[in-house]
Every structure is written in C-alpha cells, then in structure tokens.
Image (cartoon, rainbow, N blue to C red; front, side, top):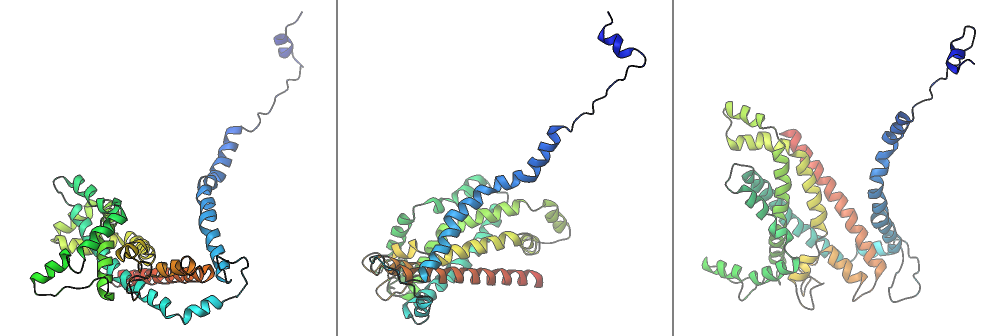
Amino acid sequence: MATSLELRTQPGTPVKHRRPGPPRRPRLSHVDVKYSPYLYIAPFFVLFAVFGAYPLVYTFWVSLHEWDLLAQEHPFVGLANYSALMSDSDFWNSVYNTLGIFVISTVPQLLLALWLANLLNRQLRARTFFRMGVLIPNITSTAAVAIVFGQLFSRDFGLINWALGLVGVGPIDWNASKLGSWIAISTMVDWRWTGYNALIFLAAMQAIPRDLYESASIDGARPARQFWSITVPMLRPTIIFCVIISTIGGLQLFTEPLLFNSGTNSIRGGPLRESQTMTMYMFENAFAPNYNFGYGAAVAWMLFALIVVVAIVNVLIIRRAARSS
C-alpha cells in the first residue's frame, strides 16, 4: 500500500498549491495606525463638548431670555439683554476695572517672569531649590494670600503705608481708591503667578541649543546681547502662549478682588465699585441679589468676546514686534 508521500511523488499526479492568504497583522497594523490617534484624542473632545462647548452654547441661549431664577417662565427677549448692557454704566465700569487691573498686573508679571527665568537658567548653587521655591506662591491658598495682602495694604496699620510714611507719603486708603485697589490687587496677582510663568519660560530656555550662546560668546556678544538676540527670539512661541494664558486668567479675575474687598460690598468691589471686575458684575446679576440669570449670561458672553479680542491683539502685537526686530 502506497503511502501518501509516494502518491504525491508519483509522476502524473497533480500537485495542488494553496496561495497564502493576506497576513492579518499588517492589516490590523494599518487600521491601528489610521484610526487609533482619533481614539486617543477622543476623551479630550468629549470632555470639552460636555463641559466647554455645551455650557457656552447654553449660556448664549439663556442670554436671549429674561431668565429670572425665581420665576417659572423665561420669556424670549432676543438681544434685549445685550442692548441693555450697552447703556449700563455699571457694566462699563466693570470693563474699565477689568482692563485696568489686567494691564497693571499682566505686563509686569510677564517681564518679571522672563527676567527671573533668565536668572534661574544660570549656573547657581542650589538652583533646584530656587526653581521649586518660585512655585510656592502659586500653590498657596488664595484666601490666605488675600488675608495677608489685605493686612499689608490696610489703611491704618498696613506695612505698605508704614513704608510709604518713611519717605513722607501719607496713608492711602487702598480699598476706597480706584487706582489704589488696582495696584493692590495687581500686586497680589503678580506675587501668585510670576513664578508659574517663570518656570514655563525656564523650560523653554533649557531647550535652546547651547551652541548658539557659545558662538555668540566667541563673537564677543555679552550676556545682555545674547538675551535679546538669542533667548527672546527663540522664546517667541512660549511668550505667545504665556500672553494668551495670562490674558484669559487676567480678564476672568474674580477671587482676588472679591476677597480683598471683604464685607457687604465685596461683590461690588468696594462701596463705589472701585475694583469690581466683569466676573464679579456677572455674579452679582446672575445670582444674589438680582437673580437675573439672562442678564448675567449676557455679561459672560461679552467677557468671552473681550477675551478673544484682547488675545488676538496681543498676538498681533508680539508678531509685529518680532518681525521688526
């Protein structure tokens, strides 16, 4: 009896060849490479849609209604809330205060952060300690910061007025003065966020190739010249990022001025609204004591538009300054 091997090798016996099917691993790899990135970034967009896009759209819908939180019905009024804002002196006062505090706090903050990052980028003893130390104000409780700075800027027993008295300047009522409250709140904001921005600048500085500085030193460029000719141009994307983040945070300022003006007039930013920001005015109208949620939503959307405009203007200014340098 012939074995299966002998039958296969007998002359005239056809031999069937099977074509190997396509391997599954390359096909799966192709699908993985093509669709897996969408799966990885999907959680961010899902969370943004739930906690970002939907509240934004819903707030705009509320702003088109007379939305009293204590009423059962919310009649549609169209753009009446926005029209009322245009003639609201308290609203424009909050816009003025917001922009004033933003300019006084953000410009020195970013300049100090850039200078501090340049110092921390040098060869210093215990530089890790100093780099970690600049972040301590940022992790300090905002309430504790407001209490301390409220005592520092106290009219009668504050350390700031005592120091000014040594040079012949009389006591300043920081809470009752518009410019004084701006300076006090801006000092509080700068103390908290300068170190945070400094660490961002420092991380970007460490990514700059050292060969550029060595070549500049050989050509005779001093450290100041290297800073303005090498460091600042290489930090342009980081500077734009910090400007945008500082713009968003500065125009949404709420906790610092609220806690600085403690008492019954805290949400008003003082007895004459000396330091009331847009977020404080929005809260005053949307919740206690007015409970006009539609009007507060309109203030929120005006704040959103202001942030977008200011951020675009800042980016255009930085880009134009970079091109001209």
